[in-house]
Structures are given as C-alpha cells and as structure tokens.
Image 1: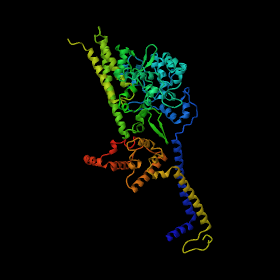
Image 2: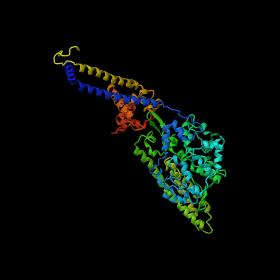
Image 3: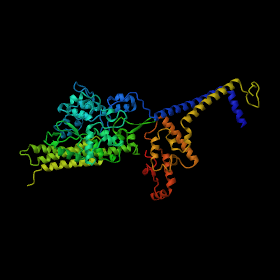
Image 4: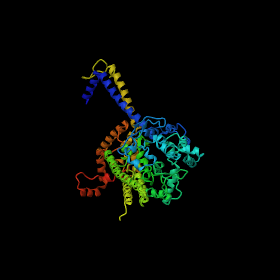
Length: 466
Length: 166
C-alpha cells in the first residue's frame, strides 16, 4: 500500500503540470455534465409548474387568435400549422398552383375531386357542387376557400354558410346587439357577400374556449339547437350543451359544431342539424322526407335530391371509438409533451400523420401495423364506395332514358325516390371525411343499402311483365 | 515535512516542490468545486429519492406523471408500487436495474431523444412479466403449463391496464 502511494506521489512530483492539467480537465468535464443536468432539471421543473404568463387581457371581444397566442404561444404555434397541405392514402389535400385572378386571389388550392372522379358530376348534376368541389384543406383555409369557390358564382349562397367558415362569436354578438342567437338569425338572412364583410378570421381560439377560464364551450347556435333536439328524441328534456355536457363530451362537441350534416330551413335560411329523429342516416333521411326537403332537383332525372355534407360527428357516433368514450380531440388533437409540459396538439390533422401520439397511446402496436389496419378499413370503404357510385350512375342513366319516353313509365316517381335514397346514403359516406374509419361497419352497411336502393330503382323502371 | 524542499525525505520518494504544492492545492479547489456542484445538482434533482421505494420518485422527471396518476387509480395501487413490478427481486439485481434505468432515463430526458408515448424495452418487459408471477404464481403456473408454449404467455398483453392505464 505504501509502495503504491509512493509511486503515485513520484508520478505527480515528476510531472506535476501534466497531472494537474489532466485532473483539471476531468473536473471540468464533470462540472459541465453537472451543469447540463442542473440546468435541464431546473428548466423542466419550471415547465412542470405549467407557467402561464398573462401578457394580454383576453375578453369575449378578443377574436384575433394572434392576441390569444401571446398568452398561449405553444398552442398558437400548433394552430398556425393547419396551413400544411399533406396527403394521406385516401384523404388529405395536395397543394396545386394556380394563377391568381381578380376574382380569386388564391395562388394555391387543393386538387379537384370532380375532375378526379367525373361520376361525382353526374351525381350532382344541376347543383353547384358539380361546378367546383375540391378536397378540403386545413382550418386555416376555411374562410378563403368558401369565399372564392366557384360555387359562389353559380348559386346564391346565404350568410348562413359563415357559421362554420369563420370565427363568429364576436360578429354574431355585434350583429345581435350582444345576443348570439339573434346575430345568428340576422346572418342567416343576409346574402353571403354582405355577411362576408363582417368577419375576419377563420375558426379561432374564441370559438371553442372561454376567454376567462379557457374551458371548452359551444358557441354555434346550430349545434346547441341540434343537440337539444337529438337529446329530446332520447327523452332528455331541455338539454343545454354548455351546462350539461361533460369535459370529455365537450372534446367532441366543439368539433361537432361544424363537422356535421345540416340544411338551411325555410325562407329565413335557418341553419338546422337534422337530428330530431336520431343521428343515423335513415333517421336523418326520414326527417328530410317528413319536412319534404330537397337540396335541388336533379338535372338529368328530375328527382328531388339531397346533398350530404361532412357528417363526421354522426358517423363517429356509430363507431367503436365513440362507444369507448374516445373523443375527436383524443385522436385529432392528441396530448403531446413540450419539455415537461403536457398540452393538446392544436395542429388539428389526420391521425394517420401522427400515429404515435394519436393511436399508440391506447394501441400498443407498431406504427406500421396501426397504419395498415386503418388503411385496410379505408381501402374496403373506398372499394364499396366505387361500386355504389357505379350503381347510382347506372340508375341515373336508366332514369334519364325513362324520363324521355312518352308517356313516362308509371314507376318514374318511385324510381326517382330510390335515386334520392341511394344518392343520400352514398354521399353520407362519400362526403364523410374519414373514408369509413370513423365507423367501419356502419359505412359499409350504408354503402350496401345505397347499392340496394339503386338496384330497386332500376327494377322499378323495368317494363311490367305481360 | 513541507519545509524540507531539497532533500529526499524517505527512500525513493521525490521531495515536494513549491510548484507541486501549489498545483496540488489548486487541484483540490477545482475538484472540490466540481464535487460541490455535483452534490448540489444531486440534491436539487432529489437524487436520494431514487434509492427509495416511493412511487413519487419515478415522476420526479415529469415523464412518468401520467403513469403515476394512472397507478393511483389502478387496481394494484394498494398492493404494488413501481419497484414491485419494474425491478427484479434481490438487492443486487434491483439496484442494478434502478441504476440502468436511471442512467438511460436521464440521458433520454435531458437530450429529449425518446419515443413519445414512451415504450417499454424488451428486458424491462421481462422484468415486469416475472413480477406478475411473483404474486400470481399459483394461478399463472397452471396457465403456463396448459398453454404449453415455447414462446411463453404474456400477462400484460391482455392485462395491460392493471398497473396504470398509460
């Protein structure tokens, strides 16, 4: 032992500077590592306290999301990313360049769905959607894409549209002298161009959040009335969504304010969600039949037809995720870590672009496996959707021929009603933006019935057996 | 001893010089500072808590907060803490596992390089699978025999939420 000590001492005393420099460097490396850990621990501790710096005062008048973003920079950064245009296998938008014109200053748009699949033009013959229908883009574009679509030129659109194409809490309140519902009614009766001048932003923080508590809230009268009618059909009286819904329900309802089937009721163009019988396709169709409502008269066949519009909320309600209590936000705005903070991702997008956070929190399988499952569902839906579209186009062709005969066959009216049914059922899946994923079995059932309606329509037109 | 500078004091040991003494003192100061910094960081980061069985220690670094929250509401909260399922039996294997986890978790969280949501490693899963069998041996033994499988049955494949939902 003494020998080792002597040797070490000798080693040091013969090369003191070398030993010193080496040991000092070692200590320096240790100190650097210690500091890295210390600073990192300190920063994470600060983050974990979830600091919220009230830089600006938010009120129910603050509709500019950039102002909210000063208090909530992380959420605001994500929110701004909805400008991204990304494709998934069956959905998502692709950025297409176009030359801006005086009437339409957009330099980028999404791909045209009716050019991709001209059968859609046949289905919508005589309606504005046959003129221009592009793949939906992110939230950031909702106001521009509605303002500049060519549908505006071929049909007179009411201010009602803006309920879901702009941030409307402040404009509604201004128009209604402080009363949201009165403002909603006023907007519905304005022409689109006039109402358009009263709004500035696409959907913003204020549309889903209370400015004082940041709690989720429903601000769209169309949803408040629609969900009340739906709950009444289930025996729940006087349902007030902002009073009676749970926090987890609100994480779906704020999205259901707009991602739903709707129509404009009566000459006052009131926005109504057709849920008084229930949320399933046959219940919604029964409601329209009872109201004797049609969106337009089909140009080729004269049938009184309907356009289904993005019934994501209704479709999701028939699926396994809804049944398991999984909300829209759980997959489309999943929780994520920012350092030690946990926030919900305000970059609202397809879960297929964010599988690890959106799916793997519950489903502990590899990303590739989860993606294959989702795309398998979508592939089957897309295949059936194509068959249903072929069946409908065949019925429309038969109806067109039958209508031209003189005299028209007695079953023409019955066949036109089958077209109305087949078309609404098909569009209920086609216009729904998950390609069946929100409720796989239900989507296939609806498409199957659509094909059967087209078949029955063609049978009705057959000449009676002698 | 220090006043003797020119004569070798004993045997073959070199005598200290002013330079060696000065550098030795300086080195002591430097090493002491580094050690002090290390000690402070250790205390500030609740380093000692990692030697305990307290589940709160596992959420020190915040990543496990959801798992801790989930455990508090789980069926196993009254009978098993984190260490009961995530470290093997025996003092040495237990602290070896703790040290290994501690090092790699700190590395991941400090650099920010980790899969989110976090995923269990194959070795850690084996530890947990064995932990199930520590308590539920009587039932599981029969199942394992009945399954007669070369790959072995995984308890957590079906009972994934008994410890914590996340």
